[in-house]
Structures are given as C-alpha cells and as structure tokens.
Amino acid sequence: MLLSLDKVTTYYGQMRILEGISLQVGEGELVCLLGGNASGKSTTLKTVLGVVTPRSGRVLLDDKDVTGWPVPQRIARGIAIVPENRRLFGQMTVRENLEMGAVLRHREKLDDDFDRVHALFPRLLERRNQLAGTLSGGEQQMVAMGRALMSRPRLLLMDEPSMGLSPALVQQNFQIISEVHQSGVAVLVVEQNAAMALSIADRGYVLSTGEIVLTGSAAELLRSEDLKRAYLGR
Amino acid sequence: MSFFLQELVNGVTTGALYALIALGFSMVYGVLKLLNFAHGDLYMVGGYIGFFIIRWFGGAAKLFIPVPLLVTIMFVAAAVVVGGLGVAMERFAYRPLRNAPRIAPLITAIGISFFLENAALLLFGAQYRVYNTPDFISYSSGIQIGSVSIDSVQIMVLVMGLFIMIGLQQLINRTKLGKQMRAVAADREAAEMFGINVNFTIAAVFFLGSALAGVAGVMAGLLFNTVYNTIGFLAGLKAFTAAVVGGIGSIPGAMLGGLMIGIAESFITGYISSIYVDLIVFGILIVVMLVRPTGLLGRAQLQKV
Image 1: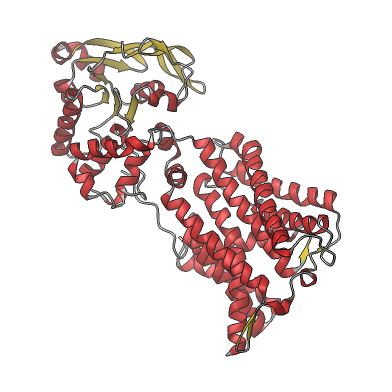
Image 2: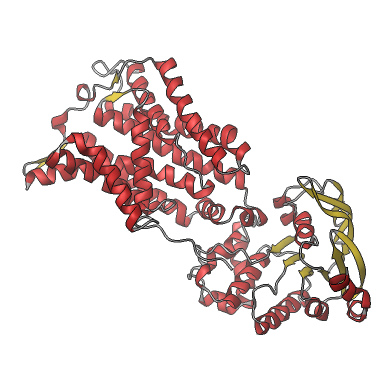
C-alpha cells in the first residue's frame, strides 16, 4: 500500500483533532476525504506530510513506518502537497515558486522537472517571470499544482482545491486533477464539495469531528443517505 | 560647493555603515517579524574584535604584519565571530520563542541587548578603546579631487559597502539559499511543506545579518577611532530608523534608508549643528511614518486569497 494511516490520533495542544483515523491510498488511486468545517481534513493531510506529528498511531509509506520522519524525507519518498488557499510565494516569480517545489531535487534534473510542468501548464512558461501574486486565480492554481508536481510525487495531497474559485475554474481544476491522476499519480484530495470530488474519485472517506464515519467507493458514497446525514444531520 | 561635496562624501560613508547594520536588522525582521534590538550590540562586538586584533598584532604604532593583511583579518574575524554570535542568539534565545506571542521575543531582544552591553563591560572594561587608525593608515593617503578629500579608510568603507550590497542583492535574488530565505520570509509554514529547512534558513539569515553588523563595527572603529560597550545602542536605533524609513523587510530599502540617514546627519552637522543630529534624524523617522507608513520602498502585503 502506498499510504496507510493506522489509528492516528493527533492533538493541537490540549485539543484532540483526529481520533484513531485509519485510511489507505493505493498506488495510482484517487481517494477523497470529505467532511465539513473543522472535521480534521487538513490535519490529516498535514499528518501525512509530517508537518504535524501524531500523538499515537502510525503513518506508513510503502508499508514502511515514517511516523517520526521529518517533511523533507517524506517528500523525497514521493509526497507533495497543494496546500489550502494555495499558499503561493506572492512576491516571487512563477519560476521561483516552481523552484521551491523542487528544493530537494538534484540540480541536473531541474530542467526536466520544469519541462514536465510546463508541458502540463504551458501558461506557466509564458508567465515564468511574473510575480505569482499578480496572477489570476486560475493561473495561481496552476502554479500551486505545478509547484507540487515539480518534485515528481507518487502521492499528491490536495487541500480544498475548489476553495475560492469560480464554478468554471473548479470544473477546470478537477479536470486537471483527473489528468494528473491518469498520468499515474495517486491523489488524496480533501474537499467540502462532495459531489465534485466523488465525480472523479475511486473511493472516499467521510470525516466528522476527527473520526471516520463512512467509507466506500465513490459510487456508493454518492448514493448514500449517510453521507447527507454526516454533512447535514450530525 | 566644496563644503557641500565634502559633507556629502562624509555622509555617504557613514550612510554605508548604517546601511550595513540596517540590512541585518531588516533581514531578521523579514524572516521572523522580530525587531532585533540586540542587533546594534553585535556591531559593538565587531568593533571590539577589530580593536583586539590590532593589539594582538603589535598595536597601532608597532604592527608586525602588513596593514592590508591586518585589515583583512579584522574584517574576516569580525564577520565570522559576530555571525556566529548571531546564530547562537537565534538558537538559544529566539528559536524557543518562535511560536510565542510576538511581545515575548521582542522583550527577549531588549534583554539580550543589555546582556551583551554588560558582558562587554565586564570582559573589556569601561575605558574607551582607541583604534589609533592614523598610526597605521595615514589620513593624507587618500585621494584629493579639487578641494574634496577622501581618505583611504573612507574609500575602503565605500568600496566594501558597495560590493557587499551588490553581493547580498545577488545572493538573495539569484541563489538557492536566497530564494529559500525569501520563501521562509513570505510564508514559513508553506516553505516547510516543500521541504525547505526552515531552521537552517533562519540561522543563515542571522549569520549573514550579524556578520554585516560585525563588519560595520570594524569600519566604525577605523572611521571614528573609539569603541566602548554602549556604542551599539544609538547605532542600533539609527539602523532601525534607516530600515523603517527605507521600508522594513526590504533589502534595497535598508540600503537607501541607511544612506539617507548618513547623508542627513552629515549635512545637519555641517550646516546646522551637531547638537540637533539625533533630534532631526528621528524627526525624519516620524515624518516618513506619517506620510508613508510602509517606508519609502516598502510594499503593503499582497492580499493572499
């Protein structure tokens, strides 16, 4: 299994955010993690990346325990993130932003990495010397995706890709995620927009106040009454 | 006219010195959003290091090594030792407070400032330490353009200042380390998410900024001759003023602010009176803050949505 969380419990100070979460993402799979506000979705991604360390439970990459590992080593093993709100370096150029996604890569490979990302997003080549903060929302999303793909990840973590985008851009964005997935990259996408996420996902998990309350194939979840209840009914 | 030009040269020289201190101040603010009030005291330590090196090599009048070598050793030693001191300061005082409310590191900075000033008093004594620069670099050894004279220490300060500033600008804009510094300054958590070693990057900023202050301390010793344990206080405030006037966090801003403050001081001394120097310099700070709160080259934070 590419990624497994095994009974992960995470605290921020005194506050328990995740309560015994277990989930899996297989090689090349597109899995979505659904849930409302403050259900622990972002924390789950941060735990996978290593920004947050769980109090108990294990994080496994390729069946290897990486729970105590720092972020750079996990990136080197093939994880990358598109953070919530994109978090671009606004005062840096598009090219520099992409470079920041490849700080751990060897210098000789950098040109290949740029070519690969530019092939996916030709617009970023045109805009390479423009400050990222001056781009349109859609272009900024491309920079955020491109930056994550620079390190040639096998598992892409996406935190709320639809946030702050117009419906047309959300559509376009999910199209891109789908393309990246089809190129063989596994994706774990966190989303509030359940219908959109499930339309491209293989499987899904539903989080509610730090616990996984529902899981199944995308098709099952789309039909599920429990999903509606998890969101609306409590 | 020649008086004007002479004052301008003197002002640019002092300004280069303020700019070097202001740069470190501004860089540290850039990555940590911390006003490092101990920064001026690093400059003081640099001044002492220069003094003791002159003494170790025989004293100003009886040097047993060539002057260019002596000066090189002074600058390198001050840069390395003060740079290291800055790194230690960050490691042991500021890093533990990285996630504390902003007031905590600020008060710590003031505490470190007192600590350094009093440690210097204890270690080096209360007496003024004198470089006696004219004993080994003659004031008449510079160049004379019309009635304007620029002595060799001034030339050295100006040339070094220029090269350091160009070099720093290149480092920040072109190198991998420089880009990582900007990324950490812009969004520390995002930088961490891409595998940038945030602790190392912040330490590197402290090393560079502190080394510049150390170099400025040696320059000040050579220019003004005297070093004592509290010279860092006023110099730190002036550098703070320079950084804020230029736009805090901005590298070109710190350079511009430093030059402006130096030139203003020189003209005030020349045309009005040295008594009013500090009054007017800090007056400039207030006026700039009222008219342009982000400083001359500072930018309002880009909206991140």
